[in-house]
Length: 113
Length: 114
Image (cartoon, rainbow over all chains, first blue to last red; front, side, top):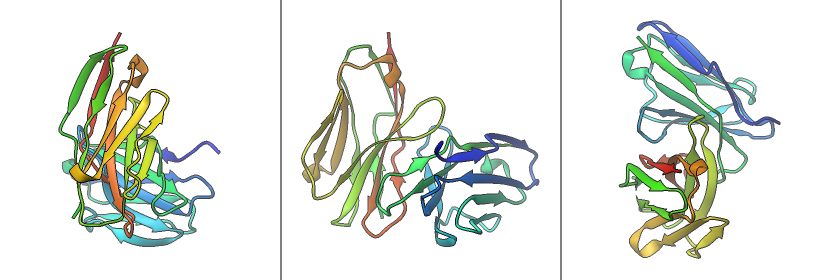
């Protein structure tokens, strides 16, 4: 297994467009997380899935953001009507245990013009 | 509410120097876990260590060592004989026993010069 995979790695879009990011976790990991990281800051939690159930969402996840994990495997994060403030690195991570080590992907960098 | 503070935003050392990265945390929980992650220029966060709140033993792994002091709510990380490959951003993080959300500090950028 090659670890957590995210694509696209980079996305440049115009304000108002919709974007979607995909995350493929490590195959036996039932827990999947999305984080957002802006320049010079630590990652901030967005949402968490256990299998296909979205169990926790941050207040950072506005109505324009939606995440899914339809079959408990890969996950998508969609941002509708993007704003310049959405520009950030979107990180996906997976794990086996609740309080265990998270395995992160390399992230998807979004630039909104 | 949980909070992790890494007061050092940037540290620059010369190769072979020892360096300590500070981490101070706040939590109301009695059971929690502390982590250190490394983020090299490639962007992928790499797990370094996990420590639970009941285990205050210091840990050493090669050139890395961690000092957990519950009395001062600190979990500091020391790199001995630093190398250029240690250059990265290092994050301290915290999660409580019931939660699924890691709270990260702002990170410390370490630059090791040859």
